[in-house]
Image 1 (cartoon, helix red, strand yellow):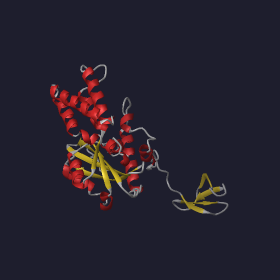
Image 2 (image 1 turned 60 degrees about the horizontal axis):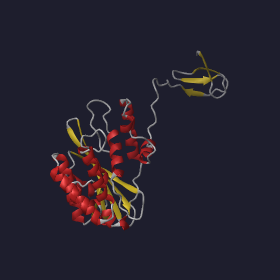
Image 3 (image 1 turned 90 degrees about the horizontal axis):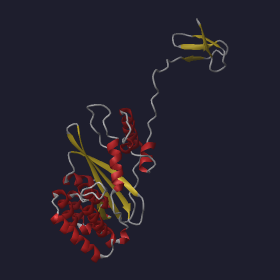
Image 4 (image 1 turned 60 degrees about the vertical axis):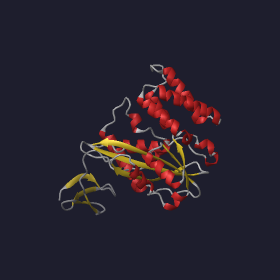
Length: 305
């Protein structure tokens, strides 16, 4: 039996070989098995904490970190593992009691030759502040009416009966479901402003800056002014600009705004419901789902959240 230079972990005395993989102390006579140490970097523990920090606005989204910096594939892979850990360990919060507000949005991405759509829904009590996440729904393909129907059917029937209003970007599938359920509809202001901004900017470098500033001023009046007369006058001017503009895309956006203008002012008509004017709650989760579904290596396909 050959003596080893290592010492006993119990009494710090000399140890000797005691078989192929065991050692024995020469003083206390205790024995134990020696296992080879693993080589390489230790695996980092995967927890759901980063996802919780993101949902609590304590962490910057990965998409924002990508601007001006290089994010490695291992970083994206770790975020995906953290997302999966969150899905496995986190229990979905119970749906609040009483009348509810439903906030819904979807994200559509094209990867590896296929379309992928994630449907996100939140419910909030009319007299509450915090929204509760409903388990997301994933479907292959684009954002279509039938899939929105399937996604909304995943909400418990008792909760669907208590929904009073829907906050969304105005997708046809959501509008059809809301009409069938006799829900009030509050369209997202941010989606409208972004659509107008993409077609007619008001910034200094824009060639149509004066027209853009007028459109934004009129739009703000329609969206926020409680005076119905002023809103109607502003809407008439927006309709006129829509007819006169040469931009087909801007014409489409403005005409759609004029047609559904009442849906953007629902929160003014029903102040007792405390309706939010944007679906950004769902948008933030959309960003998380997309950044954490980026493929780790070539050939992988985004998995549902």
